[in-house]
Each structure stands twice: as structure tokens, then as C-alpha cells.
Length: 455
Image (cartoon, rainbow, N blue to C red):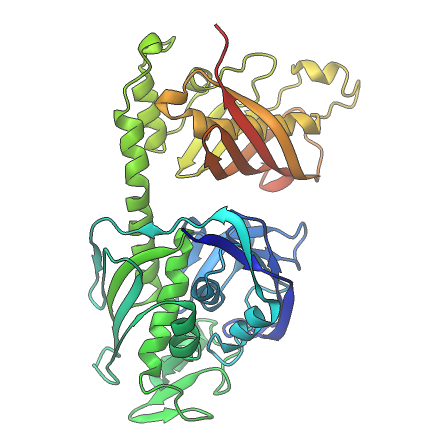
């Protein structure tokens, strides 16, 4: 059983973005266990972060773009492939523009950054996802399948629509094969695509310094090809980066014919759906506790559990069947979305809240500690949703990295977004952000514990 890894120290690199053409400095920073890979836009107010997760993919036209709110980062696949290739589980990628520097079109510069920063083992266990049954997607141009395998293996065929420059390559991915056989393969395009790309606002920073151009039977490049099959190896590089968006190391054999970022991300969604199946099965078929088969409203625990497993929203009556909290300390009015280990809920802040009598007279502001309590309660729902946890208490134990950014006043709808980052036994850890009208007002990492309620 292997351990999670992060960088030993921060390291930076500057260059231009391939599609945006913007000058950008990128810094890779160490991160705590279970953080995953996060992109931080340090050029934007509040320095918003975007988790490198398939749920945050917003565009796949010639590159992969992730977004959250108004913040986005495009062309993330090369740096993600580098993190996955070296087995780095947790890191923050800071950029001061909307795209990482492209370097020479490969991941070579990113590899230098990782080796300069060093790799550090962490105490937490790494938990790869192993494909349990075959998955496949097929479009007019693309066929992608994945089969059970004890490591990550990729077999790929690439060519253009006319079948030119067809190449095949197969490789099992390890830190050694990643660096030696994949990382130096450069991005490429066909000459006839350039006009379309320019008209669509892409490759503003493109040149023969950071891409290979194929024109008829000629290969235009500033140096000889680095591999006999450089084109298909770069396709494998993109696959590694895009599939890392499932948020866990992957074990499976991928067979890809003419892959694309769109197809890669669609396969990632299928894999993520397969990852959720065991949890959904447990939640759906676990028998309810004998002493509490029915909740107050006549709905069975299994029915509510299945609703949450299916991602259904919960109204206030259903929320009160999950959470034991009551007035005046229930900080959740409804749950609008449950998606795997993420949940979104709402607290409508009314002037009738009892704490406004003293906080403050004639200037009512919701106490920041109650926003933390809201985050903890919403996080608790993710653990309490399992049938055998119904009726337990979620004790708020600690809060870290707490920030209060703006006051919350009567009339505001507090949107609470929480991602469960760790759940082991009775202990849960979560990252929560509260926002009003799309702007963050508070955030924190919270730890809570489930305990039995006294009779």
C-alpha cells in the first residue's frame, strides 16, 4: 500500500500560454494530504481556487479548461499529466493568468520543476481506483475503452481524418516510463487546422518553438522529432492529464483510437460514475436500523438515503430527518445538490434570526462562527446520509484556514458548498466555502466526528 505524495518545496517557471498568448508565471506549491491538485488564480480578487476535477471541466476545444464561478484555467492537461506521471497526489498550481506556460509544447519544463522541487511522502494512504468492468465510448471519429488492469496502461492509435501519419504506441505508466517515453512529446497540429484555430481565438501564443506542424507530407519543427511516434505519444500525454481529473490514481488498460480532449473527459465521467456505484449500492440496499425504520414523516430511512445517493435535493423537512439540529441552531434550509463527495446547500438569512438581537443592534451581521457551523452541518449530511449513520450527531471538532471575507446580512441567501476530503470511521474532514450572490464570504477546513445520540 503506497503513500500520498506532494512537492518538497515550491518552484516557479515563466513563459507564455499556448492559446491565450498571455505572459504567465506558474508556481507549484506543496499541499496537505487529501488536497488533490488545485489551481489558484493569484491575479484575481480573492485568489480563487479550482479543483482539478471532472465536475469543473467547462470546455474541451483543443485543450481542457476547468472553471469555477467566473474563474477559469485553460490548457491544464500537460501539468496534470506531469503530476499524475510522477505520482504527485497533492499540490497547488498558482498562475497569474488564465493558462499555464506552454514551454516547448511538451511536459519537459514541468518535469524539471518537479525534480527541482523534489517529491515528499505523506502519511496518508494513496487509494487508486481499479476499473471493475469495461467501459467504452464511441463517436464518429473516436473509440475509447478501458478494461481492468493492475496498473495504468495506455494503448493508443492516432491519425488525422484522412488516415495520414497513423501511429500506434502502448506503454504502462510509471514515473520512469512517464519521464522517458511520454513527457517530451510535443503538441502538434495539421497546417489546414491553423486558420480555424486562429479564427476561434486559439493558439495566440503558438509557434514552431512550442508545437509541431504537419503540412502535407512534411513535418515543420525547429528540431528533429524526439520520438519516432511523437504524435501518438503526445495523445497519450493528454489522456493521462485528462483522466487524472477523476481525482484518484487509476488502474486500468485504456485502448484509444483517435482520442480527443472531449472523449478523454467523457471517459473520465464514465469512470467516475463507476466509482460511485458501490457507495450507491450500499446506501440503497443497507437495511435501516431496526429501532428507527420510519422517520417522522413516514418516509423510510432507505428512501431518504437513496434520494441523497441519487443526488436529489432535500427540502427543510427532509433535512430535519437527516440532521438532529433544531431551532435556533439548524443552519441549513435546503440541500440543492449532492454529487459524490460534494454537496451544495442554502441558508436563507432572515432578520428574525435570534442572534441579530445582539449581533449587532441596528447593524445586524450573521456571526462568522455560525457560518462555520453551517459548513460543518452540511458536511455532516454527507456522512449522515448513510442509513446506518442516521440519528447520530456530527460534533464540530476544529476549523483551519478560516477566512471571513464579507459580512452576511438579513435577506442574504447563504450558499454553502462543501467537499468531503476525508472520511475514515467516525472522523470526517471537509473544505467548505460560503458565498452570497456568487461571491465568497467565508471559507474553512473543518473536522467533525460522528457520535451516538443519547436516548
